[in-house]
Length: 164
Image (cartoon, rainbow, N blue to C red; front, side):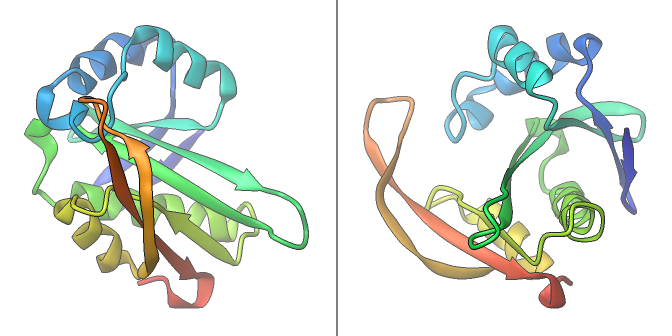
């Protein structure tokens, strides 16, 4: 499957993407926010079928994945992504998140989306806010960073009617 944004193409994760994504994910600037992006992890993601390779100008730039809560009372979807360091600060993250958000709303039928970056990941938070996500609250000691320290996360959400 392919999803087309203004500047990116999201392609269903394929085995041939794994080595490049593992290399991008191993960069310390990426791994500080999302550790463990290695080949075994990526092969698990491939099997799950909910991940897309981010392609920009014909190059593999990163990965985005989504998950869904399908219980009718709490139905929503969430996503997470990373971009390799050479692809950051170019607007590609915003286009990627917007493209995935539109897919989850239009094709998967979700009315509400969530995302939960580290509370001090200012670059990611700015990106998500450009798409329309709004802060809901701090999740205290939400994630374990690569140094073994519990860190806070920021829960953001957006309603389908609020997508930028």
